[in-house]
Image 1: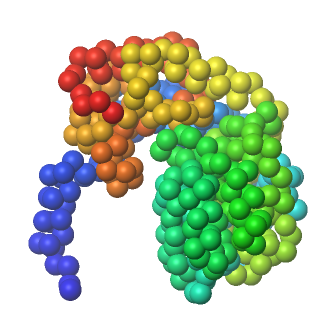
Image 2 (image 1 turned 135 degrees about the vertical axis):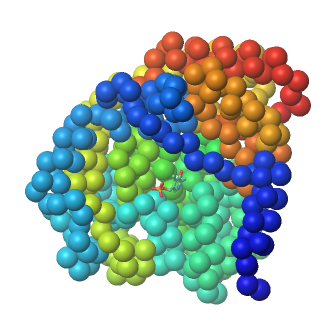
Length: 397
Ligand SMILES: *Cc1c(COP(=O)(O)O)cnc(C)c1O
């Protein structure tokens, strides 16, 4: 059926009726040099509590300097895909440094995390096989499984027993995929159990640690470091560079043969322009800071604990998260939007996350903390949330 404009208009109106219409917020400036937590929105300065810049690196002068210097040397764009003429010294050095950081033989740079998941999953799974994924895995993993032609099976969130039942039921499971840290709840995947299951099943295990890398573990190596898992247990590690690394891009890390195979077969790697070398240079600067400044992770941990301790007035709405992702579950989409607007009026930028990004009935304020926040920022947010949630007559989460 052809979707004429009238039909599109009606679907948009229906979306608006159920409070599902999304609006982009236009950031006018970052009014404090070097501080990514202060943003100008609608002519006012707000404290940003909805960025994934967990270590506060996106505005670090070392990244900007590296990016400028590399742009002068290599140009603003790469000019071609990696396999034609777009693979520069900066990309290559970054791949080697990421592989060393992740404790893997090789790493392959992708333009985005979405494309890394798409490339890895579609290269490794196909028709006649099944991909088993956590029900709440990132959209890019689920899309990738569907695009691969394999059958997508989703198991109950963070439930390795459910995953094991799915494997018993379906011997064709050849790839198990999960986020390390779940992006909307901040909880961790049960990786040791999933690693044991993957080994028993003879399946690949892919962990997308977009929100763990740089943040978790004493050295910032992410969920795997926190849960003591080695490369043999998790053969495919996906990391993104636009979150804690404050830059842009993504990588897949693993054994040399696996990476060579992806280089030859991952279509989202082959058929796209290499990311700008200057972006890779900025990421290299970020990787140095991730490794040399563990105080950023410690500071973040302190702020997470501080926020949770200050949240006693709405503790029942929190999730058991030890990561900088601290959702406050509201339930109703319209109420969540109203709360987000009230927070903005009080000086806090907090996004309302609604279905279908999160399960129906679990609309939430997705609060994210950064090492660049101050104690006073966190205290002020917790106090305002306590006031707003107590004042309003909200259904219990
Ligand atoms: C953000 C995210 C991605 C996508 O990464 P981009 O580089 O933004 O495309 C993939 N997986 C997870 C779990 C994410 O949170």
